[in-house]
Amino acid sequence: MSKRDRRAPAPPLLSVVVATYNRGPKLAELLADLGAQTLGDDEFELIVVDDGSEPPAADAVGDIKTRFAMTLVRQTNTGQAGARQNGAERAQGDIIVIVDDDMRLPPDFLAAHRARHAAGADVVLGHIRPPPHVGRLPLFERFHLTQLDNWVRSFEDGTRKVRGVHLCTGNVSFKRKAFFAVGGFDTSLRRSEDRDLGLRFEMAGKKLVFAKEAVSIHHTDHEDRDKWLRRAYLYGVHDAHIAEKHPGQEIASPWRLFHLAHPVSRPLLLASAMSPRLGEALRRWGLEASEALDDAGLEAVAIKGCTVSYNLEYFRGVAKAAGSKRRVARDFLRYRADRRRALRP
Image (cartoon, rainbow, N blue to C red; front, side):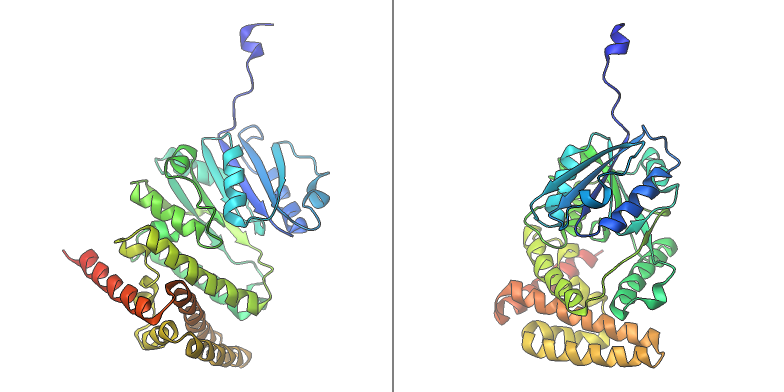
């Protein structure tokens, strides 16, 4: 046997990392989509991290035979950041692609991500699209998908620049070297770990691009409104913690959402942060009204109302992280000062 024959196989170019939790059937569909990719089976690997699913993910996919290399790892539940960090540390490819376990992928998905990296990108934000049955989803899920559609339109028409805070681990890829250079995921975060990672990519001068052609279809199974509200609250809590990590960065502050909100709703958002109990009541009334409007066929208005309700709950989380009205006021005024400096010519 020659020296050439004894060499280990070359590592794949791409490593796909999927963190999964209690979604065995959807994970099996994702594996089927990966098996139909236009890339060769030796050009990518899959690392699935089961974040404490019951029953274990292996029960649903353990017997599935794939032509590409697949590693299935089970861990005690730590949350998405810990699971994705675990997968990234096992990745061998120069490019890490992360997708959610409830995504469906067209055959050219991985090729589209690879092409953008070949063109010079360090971080590629993919295009998350709604499923065909979007009209049957709960109002809060249609609100979320509408927000994603608005992002896409603004990226395309140039009214919004791709920033680190837009990074979404539902569909993203990045150079492995760049990921570890900025420290990987902050595993202490139970939410917004992607926002934090994106901020550090941007601060390190990495090139972030949006790729409309790198499509994934979000077949969400979220149906619990209370869990959705809890996520909104936790995003507010963790975004406030992230802002503390990056002082002086206007883009990192949760109060940035205040200025992105419609001016009419801003006094309500400030009231929710200063008086979380009042914010809870306003959110409850607003969401009930939005759902009534949706039942009446006024979806566009209902989604706007749902947006306000989400923001009210988000700023209740911001208030929780602040701990006091004085701290809320201080953080708000500090953000206003940072914003003025950021907008100064």
